[in-house]
Image (tube, rainbow, N blue to C red):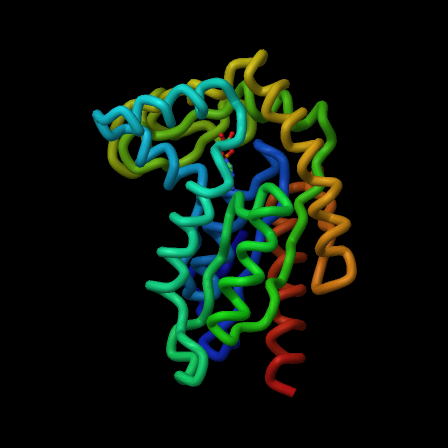
Length: 240
Ligand code: AMP
């Protein structure tokens, strides 16, 4: 994954969606692509985890849902994403001074996909570019049980494929690495089942638009190269 920070300044304002099971590499690849394109990446999982730390009734309820591996209520997620997109994306009629956003983990249901379409239509923006990281169940299970995350900055490591040079602490800020509550094997199986149930209808929903299936079982640098090739082609098409 070389070339960090090389921005594609003229990428037209566009929403890029990452579809993929927990552990498919959505977080890693969307952060990388975000650096390449110079646009923000919004992870609904990170957003909800931050929200769940609030010492309120809503925060406590959210913590319970996240720890169980179930999906959070569509209405709550849609409201939060809508607020963020309205804040960060250019409105219809304005020049595309900002260059879109990457959504990591949204939409997860058809109701959320419809909500996103409404927001984009309202803002005069084109439909999303959909990048689906398709990873085998076996690879997902071994990746997720070995995943560790910095409790402070959210950086992701993997005991097998991407250990921290600082051992059990984060390379970036030295804070302790933790296993997420929802990365235990029982919860992982539930999350993967929830994903399987929601993913097929989403693929069907996006299948006739700008949808790309990427083999996510390969080396991360090969996946990054393919993602960049797709986005670059898209950029050329938009400029033509
Ligand atoms: P992730 O970090 O994307 O694996 O998400 C972690 C957890 O956050 C999921 O298991 C869900 O409980 C919740 N979550 C993240 N994104 C969504 C979404 N779009 N809709 C509902 N729940 C979500």
